[in-house]
Image (tube, rainbow, N blue to C red; front, side, top):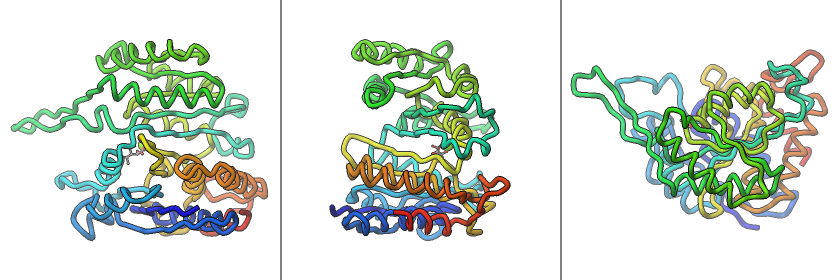
Length: 353
Ligand code: IPM
Ligand code: MG
């Protein structure tokens, strides 16, 4: 197969880890006889430095004509000036919106070998295998915001339409059918009107999926149950900001933020694939960042955008094998393990493929 892949490393460790994911995709191309054409572009702080904007038109245009986007991370202290209106994060938000990627899939699967890396007790973690489906182009992230003229009051607005809610719920229910047929819809319906609309819409959709077990959960309660009984969840579906917060929490169920991949999907097959971790400026360029979340994101790219299931599974198996051989980046290292750096880990996984 021929595929065009846009590579957007962004800032900080985004640059370190995206190179390893690309390396792994190159190994897949060689092993399975595909042709992947990679084109790189700037986004985030790197784009602000070069062009003054976090999402240059050329970058968005490149993504639009690609089959998939491999994304690193954006942000860093250099661009944190609150008096400046441009921020690196706007690059990522603009891409999600511009490409219509409304469903963000964040699978959380605990590799039993990493059980010690988590701060949570092994018996609580055992059997954890869930996916959070996060709404990605609506809600408070994209509502009107601002300050009053006197600067003494600020506002952010959350809006949802039934159309926006339905399409992401549909993704969750269809996904549940391919898994353990259980959906948890998360909201704050005891307080927010958007959540009440969300809840009504979810109940109606659940009626269309009698074969899928369904429950509503309030977001605060979900945050608690996630670390109390993580293995009981299958598919969790929620709005944009709740999904952002719950997935950082859920990442600890997989041992480390450095392990969690994500896929952002819309109507067609084009998707954006990124680790859920940020740009970690404190360790950027040191060659110690864990590239596995980025590498596992490239597996999702193969699965969802290119429909190459065998190849995706090969990447995931190669990651499992590298871990089974005892290799760990420093975020996961424990006594007796073979500590390795970013590119060493990438080389290992690529080599196994
Ligand atoms: C994420 C990140 C982003 C988000 C930031 C960088 C804007 O935290 O993908 O989870 O909040 O969506
Ligand atoms: Mg986040």
